[in-house]
Length: 311
Length: 269
Image (cartoon, rainbow over all chains, first blue to last red; front, side, top):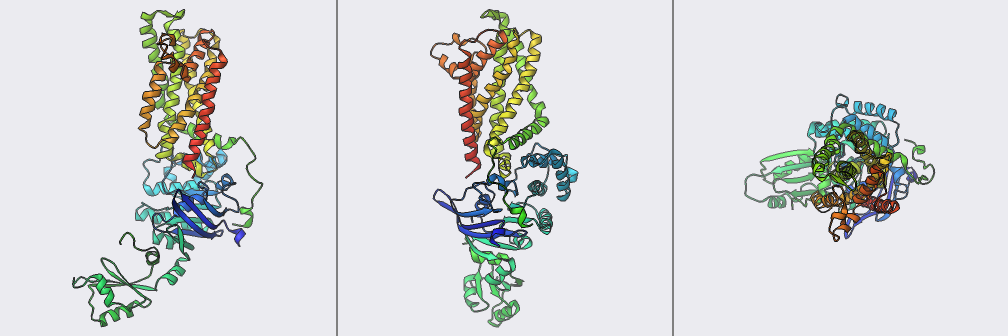
């Protein structure tokens, strides 16, 4: 199994001077998998992606991409990668189609083949009608789809997507997700970073949660929820102003697995939400609003990486 | 996705000269140029012709002849080389910094199997082509002004190619090193303008005070002007040809090494 992995890392470290961006991570990505790096800003996701993309040299540890050494065979590895970077780097003065054909040439694709692939990919990302138009007037979502198409122009074995939907509106995000899902169905191996939980749940078969350069959890979205959260979460809002949420949390102690007081609401983690609500009422508490919902990756994420910004 | 697709075939890239990615980089520049060439016609073709008319014919009427030839013929090689110089600086400052900072085209290339040195080489080759195109157009016009006095005038093409390499590479290295375009103001003020004014373009360097002459001798522009003037007038340059060529080559080689280093540093960590 290990030698079939498209990506294999052991004790991977990246330091910039005194700062350790990636602090000894291990991971394996198998062919056909959709693998996600989830984590807050500065967790080390992008640094890891840059090492996988062979544009950043690991400081320590072992890394194999497509069975090769990224330091020695970087050029040969990159020939088989598709990269969709966090910041769009399309050529604004070239047409939509030229952005794809020009890029295909970097991979040694013949001109005729580049044109054929460009038309096919523009069809795939639903930009055929803009083929001869300029890049500049495209919306953020269209530019992102074009960047994804460009990442496919060398028919890569592995596609790296760094925050593929950051900054897009909901419609645009869903269209990007749908296209990425199609790629996944075709058997393309996807590796993506995100700080959107819904994106990770939508797209990833398996993911790691990174925080402070380390992997703090690994598994499928479902397994992560099962291991790090309860089946349901009760959100309680108190508006009587009698007590602070911390004081309410003390009164709720013992209900469910865990109580998490936030500035605006109190979260109750319990496998049976309705039973927990009944217990809240039995204790004589009268929250202004009660919401019982399923646990999401966001609960896992916040549990594992903390609420530093809130604190 | 099967095991075959991830099998390594052969070890390392055996080719010392990586032609394919360099050609692809040149193609990108040519595609851009095909879209944007109209914008460059004024600065790289019409402006130098206007210079020739106003200074060559206008000022030339008062100057009369210089070093035994009419003033227009004397400044033709100067304006030619200074035009080449301007194109080189113009295309190696903002466009290069822009492809790092704003367009990030170099990062896009770097994610593909294009190495930093391939980008440097591709940009240089494209610049040589750009400059040659302007020089050919310029020479064709100047023939009708009677500004060329020897078939050696064709030697201005390789001379300008050498000047391109001597100017584009260090300027590209500089553009790849800075973070803000305000540094270009320094480059224009303290390098480009003095190099244009004091490199024997409009008057012989011997007219300068002895103390300032070394500025001209240090400038690659002066060496290219001297060689070009010798070519269009059909006479020997002031210094031995090998010295002029050697000096330009020195700039080209050091500039190329500096540019490759600067690109690698900026695109890799």
